[in-house]
Image: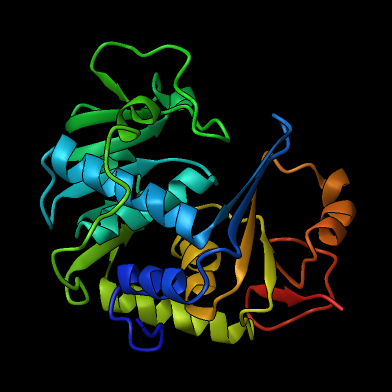
Length: 266
């Protein structure tokens, strides 16, 4: 069995989570503007990661070291794209597309298609961001509809190798290797004293390193579950804390205090 304590890159952390705890919820997603909620176990999340990685490699011919730019908000599909890109050894950029030198693959929310600079993109992939992964309402010429294309790909993907020593993420012009990301994720989990019993409610952007650590890598490293929110309605907070059995939060006020970005409840 893969041990999360010896995982050398993010794909190793996910593999360990699936082997040790495949059925318990890993990601719960709310979009308060749309009234949507979806819950994904580690196994279901990993299936989406595999399908997306296969789309990147088989559908777009992506190779380790190729660039992927993500223009995506807080969403479970953003977490999928991060993990799928890293599993394939791709170098994710969270800076604005116009700030990244091409060529690259560009994954962008449908609502932002008209606003992003895709002039350097080899491929432009649109995401509807429907909670259940539904297709885009309208697909402009030159845009690949992620939801339509990804379903044709297999739900198993084996990384070519560990990408511990290779660049996997650049954000605010700072680059991190796979080993850097695992180390930072473990440190973030430790700072919040997170473990497998925790249900972590977050409201942080996925355009910063801290957002990626809090929302994805710290939960993977600690075995905890994460609840992410889009278009957050503060009026729902108290009820959500109770319904989701939340034990810690990040990016929210009203908790009892804690270490670093996390606040413990109770």
